[in-house]
Image (cartoon, rainbow, N blue to C red; front, side, top):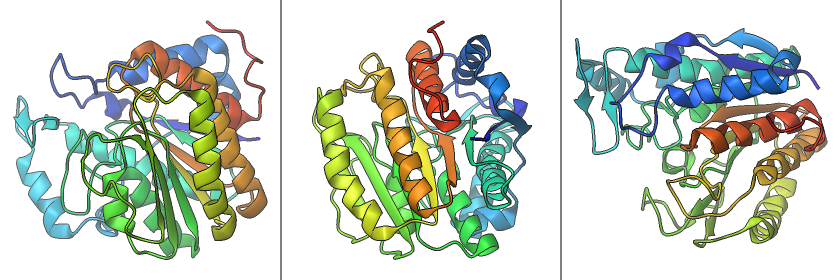
Length: 315
């Protein structure tokens, strides 16, 4: 497998204060661990590019984009909601995050890579069409999916979200869209407290109880997601890859282990092999314990690279 790894220094310019869990140290922890393990050197590394207005406007109304730009402070930090703040560089970083997924889509459709991981921030899956929230400004995975449809004529795009929080933004944008299947596992009941019940045929909501462990998680995913994916036969598989369902993450109470992130990535790759010519584009969402985030991404990358989970010793 050829795995592309996309990131950009601008993603570290965005910060929301010294105590905020979604901070630049998240990417530092990931890159340090991947470099020490030798995995980073096995990828095709590249820089993300900024999303254009046209890219963003496929999923966010232009009036909303302009309103967001008016909120950017000249200095300091402004608050959009209780969780989401903005500094002078926040939208520059957010455009880079969304643009990384656009570039990843180009790479898999041009056969420059089999799969892509976008190590970027801020995350995006809580960003609704007209509402920035939950640490998110633009919906990165939705921007990439809309681009794949426009640029490459992709139909039947599957978005698999295994973050511990439900992808309300992705659902808001694609609900009732027959060309996009959204599968979302999440702790229930939990933030964002909206769209938590499946009211649309193309949305597979998969609530997880507090304390859900590896065995139960895998059973639920296999019974909920696999039948829908095999019936849908996606031409592109996209992953909203959150690592905050780990048992050691401070944000929630689901009890996954490192290997579960390998397992679910491998499952997604098997679907892509069957129906999507191996095309997988993954983008970072949550994960707020730097150690377990880095370990989860390491497991994710091993799967994308086609390596066994135990092939690289722990650092």
